[in-house]
Length: 272
Image 1 (cartoon, helix red, strand yellow):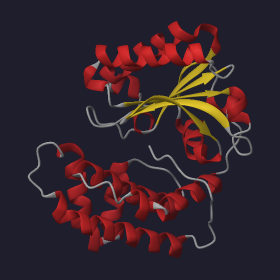
Image 2 (image 1 turned 180 degrees about the vertical axis):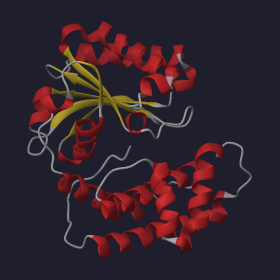
Image 3 (image 1 turned 90 degrees about the horizontal axis):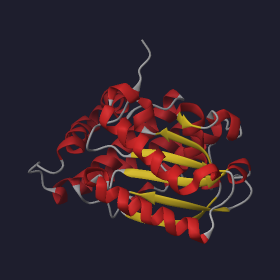
Image 4 (image 1 turned 135 degrees about the vertical axis):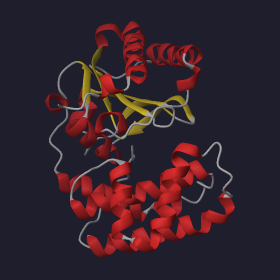
């Protein structure tokens, strides 16, 4: 039987339906599609912990009035669903932006955990997100992803993952809380799995694989799995583990260079 996340996670599924309805109420026919991807689509979703990664496809880019209405909508949505107020990520991207994302930068709107709804500019650095939607995205409204996202070679995706790991010593430094350290460690596990096995996977499968592949780090990986679900109640001291977390990041960078020395990518990845 095929796994159906909409049935496996009914509360999250209802949130997605409600969010789609709220977006449609603001944008009407300007909304061309709505997709969920990331952990919800790949079987890695954990209630109360995982984000809902979504993308709203637009027939045209947003104007100032629509931006203001969407900002108000997301604020009201958070008030109605306080348990989900910091667990939803939505990008608003036009059809033309998707078709030319490698070569042209376009305005996009985005809301993500820790960030309010705001206008950004996006281009090739969003390749990993579009690859994930193309490969694993669930269509809640509109055409299938392959009909609107141009083909993205797996090697392009792998190159962005390698780039993300190479940049990790910088972006991981502020991630001192245990939940953030868990994200860093498990993201490194999944990146190494992806580059060695040449396929994307869940954080759980990647952690299991990494324990066996890198036994010297098994204890830290076990703690990361625990922190991911228990960061609010654990008595572990973040400061005591942070140096080892950063050491694992440095190890991952060296391992990436060993695995794929030929890969080089200037873009940045948004890991979900």
